[in-house]
Image (cartoon, rainbow, N blue to C red; front, side):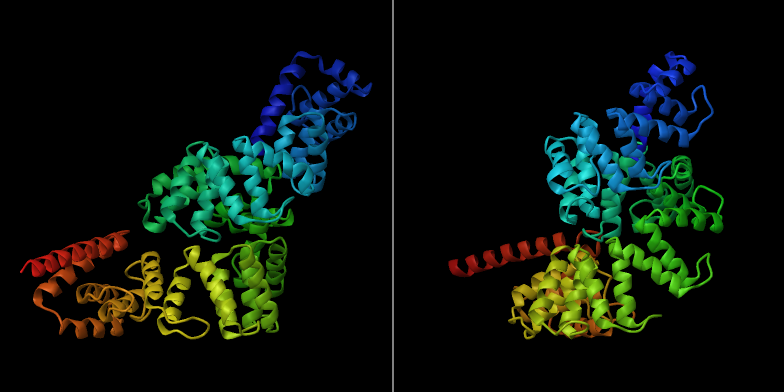
Length: 535
């Protein structure tokens, strides 16, 4: 989006000169081979100033000027090829034109050098500009690391550069962070963080963020904003105006988002056929999210005739571009043998690709595959490594799994109750008090440790509170545990346990309530010991 805006600014600057010239005189100069005139004439045709708008003519004049060494024309062509505007999207061509302009000293090209250029050339300019604090370069470097275009893919570094740019107020980086926090692919999902970044970007007019803010208000996503349809419509309308204009100019990302809005009727009259049309345009330009979206549509027959062969091809296109969701879908498809011959080895390879990119769920999945020996040789050490990778990125299932492994011991892990308790606590914090599996969630498991004093200070009160939190209409294990421990407790202890349970149940308060109770309990125990010693 920023590149489109910048392109218009660049054109507007040229227009100031072109407007003063007589168009016929400018055409004569251009036809005589004058490079600045050729470039200005391209801008005039591009914007339709004094001549019928003609993007094809515009590109021809840009190419003539660029081939004569005009840096503005070279930079302009770089933008067009990068965005796929008026020409077929071609990152290599984009990089070549950026490179030519940059070698003439174009500062804009030095941080807009794009995909397909060797790391030791163009990307180094990006890195230099980013390290000097240029927010646009930081965002673009984040994008390159995110996509692995022109530089080895590294999602951790992508997030680092997005954060630097976002904290400087870069709206595109803020929107990118919003998406990362919303999806939780490479960073622990956090809807409160997501909407915070989306709002920052949306208030700067970023259309992608405006769309997401609209969706959050429309559906009350994550409980972080109240459901408010009138607010949603206001944001949708802002977004759709930009997306429509950019989509008809060939911008793949805008085409995809416009397709989504038609698909759902967000800020625009619902029209599934139009939705498919725009998503298909984006997919045919190589936009991976659109390709994956089409794969899901053909899988389930959403707006199209169900066609599993077509679905597979779109998933494959997205996966081959390194899109982690596409890789995960292909992996699950082969592992389960859904509409393809079952091939667990192939399935594991696709999951591994996604996991190596930092896909948190896929890292947990790889741990599970190595533990079971499914599609890979059984290897408990490898399983533990993948569980730890996922757990350290905040995956609650991996944290709970590590808790179980350290609690029981075996399968490549020495029994360690203290470690088990720490992982159960992390899982309980991330899952939330109500997220239990038949009463056997991290809360109930952690309660057992407190009941028996294994890896933690023994406390019937804390154990009771945890069992109470885990208890629900179908959670028989937790109910039985609560009933069992209740018989060992005084009325005062039960009352304290109930109070602690209520405090832990408050949103985001689980760990604080637990730590606070343990600190107070420790202090009281010290007082009792001191009193006994004095006696």
